Image 1: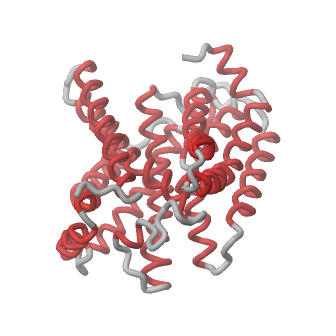
Image 2: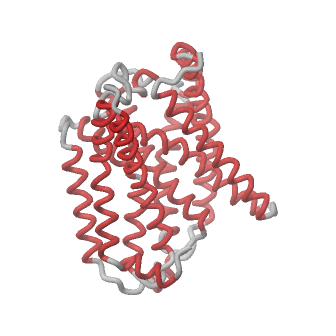
Amino acid sequence: MLTEAATNKFTGSIGNKVFLILANISYPYSLYFFFGHLSDFKDGSWVAALAALCAFLAAILVPALGLLVVWAAGKNIERSRGALSLRRFAYFSVATPPLYTATGVVLFTIEVPGRDIVVWSVGWLIVLIFLLVTRSGSTQKKNDEKGLPPEWLRWGHGIAAALLLIGFVFLHLANHSVSLVGTETHANLQSYLRLWYRSRLVEPVLVLLVLWLVFSGIWLARFRTISFVDWWGTVQTASGAYLGAFLFSHLTAALIMARMKFGIDTNWVWASGSPVGLLGDPWNVRLIPHYLLAVAAVITHAACGLRIVLLSHGISAEKTKLVTLVVVACGLTLSGILTSALLGLRLI
């Protein structure tokens, strides 16, 4: 844990703000280095393999750094407007993988491809300028005025999340898990499940649930960012920020770009970047951390929500913590399995 003095220094330092923004700007370059060294590894160079691994870890560390800043800045937001701004933009850092993917998707959809890095870098430089000119006055009055989110908003968000998890997400993840025994098996199960979630009645409801979750999640995050919350509360909001960006990116890519604009079937072949695969194209490699952290985020976010429900029903803190950790661990395991399947792992 950071001490109060260390926290104040961390959130108030111009150098740390610059470091956070530069880390975000470096994200696409880390992916390109990863792809470049991966190509060299195909020729048998273990040095290239190590370099590729380091580049990929550098990319993954960007959202991890964002989570650290969110936690550290949260300890100082009652006294510093600068810390509040830093904390809010740090949530965008947590969501770097889907936000960068969304940048490419949107530019490709409007037929301006190949400008991803330029748009991404300029956007974060604008954020840096904003952070540097933001005064560090007190936010206490603003915090007192905002109070807590209305109860109906929390219930509405939680019920919609439960419906989406049961009606689509768990089925979707189970469908992807089947790919481990073959793409054809995955396709057969998918055709059956689509009778449910792509029906004329259900699909519009699922899309509305997604839109409501993103909207209500942003609303809830506004309350969460102006008051200090514990570690699990921070993880819940951070994973929610990632999911909000992922849902926007995925909905734009699958529904608008693929299905509406180009008439592409958004099946396993599409998701895995065929015919070259996720590792065979410099654009596709961005989907590896994008998918990897998405599965972990959705299970973690659900675990944090379950934690609140258990505590509100009188379950002891020790048992609740154990259940939360087990669910999160299952999410991380499933994330690794599904990402491996997307990269071509088959059990049969």
